[in-house]
Image 1: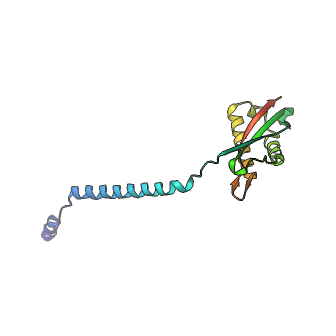
Image 2: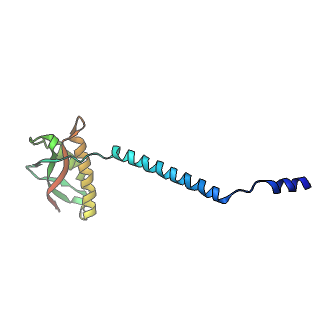
Image 3: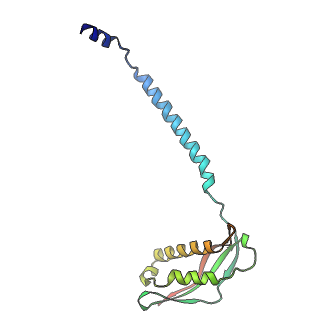
Length: 150
């Protein structure tokens, strides 16, 4: 038993300074690696915003049936990209998407700025997707020229 106490007493004591140095080195290396990862991957995810081209306005407003016997009179224009050229795009699909987007909506949803913004953002996503050809976006935004609820 005496030998056990002597061997325990003779075991080298751990230096707390060495432990702190090791932890600091690991933190610095981990932080540098994480920083390099985020810097290298941030460029891949960002897509250059398309440049504005011509604006194509819908010639006619459309009337859409809302919920509970209400109506929406909607006029809009499409902001085309420079990639689309100077010729106006055909608005037939945009009319259909707008009608589908607003039909059956509650007037309460469209009477607030937040509600209109959310519905418009959804419409813009659908229109941009519909007017993308061979990976080239032809339309980048939708502008309201008329928005009347009854």
